Length: 118
Image 1 (spheres, rainbow, N blue to C red):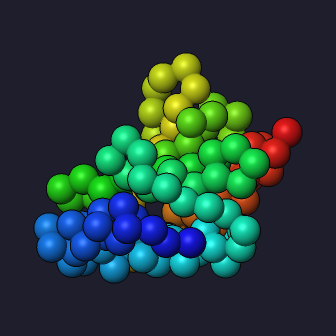
Image 2 (cartoon, rainbow, N blue to C red; image 1 turned 135 degrees about the horizontal axis):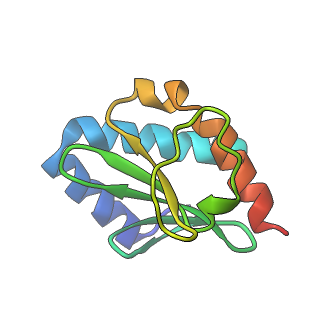
């Protein structure tokens, strides 16, 4: 699922913040474990994941990672982890590897993927 643009972005992330690079790799592995046929590409300075249509993006900032949902307003939020006040976009802020489970990323990724197929 990799290409040179993805590899370069991952190298840049690793150089700037090795800890967040490890978390990004864990999020990528989680996405592919849940949606094995997903594709990824570099867009808007991050990684966009798609099946028939895009369902999420992973963006790295100085001290955190943002898992973005372009139609996050359509997601259920039983764990109250979605952030954002816009009309449609929502995101989950991830600061360390334990947030992957603590913020129920699997649940939100699966729902966002299902919604993208509608």
